[in-house]
Amino acid sequence: MLIRVMYHDEKYDFVPAARLNELIENGRIAMFQRGSSGWVRVGVDPVRSKDSESPYAGIERRQPQIA
Image (tube, rainbow, N blue to C red; front, top):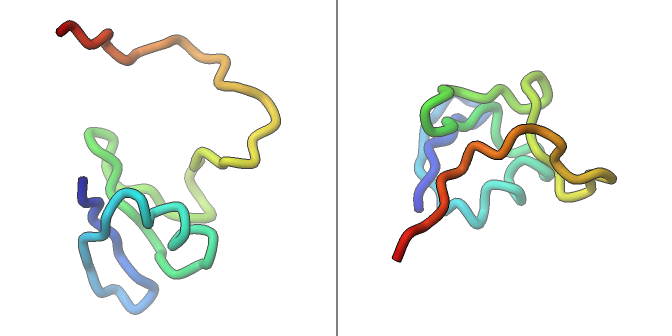
């Protein structure tokens, strides 16, 4: 899956989802587009972290996959 990102020089690109964390951690992007909730500003809006000490405690909103 490709994710739309905006670099600090205001240029846009599509990057593989697997590279998104790397770009965020290295400070390479200013924003990325999250599905239905729009643009996420890195360093301003909440972004999940792999270093999170506690698991997600919110309501499960994902739909079960039916084969």
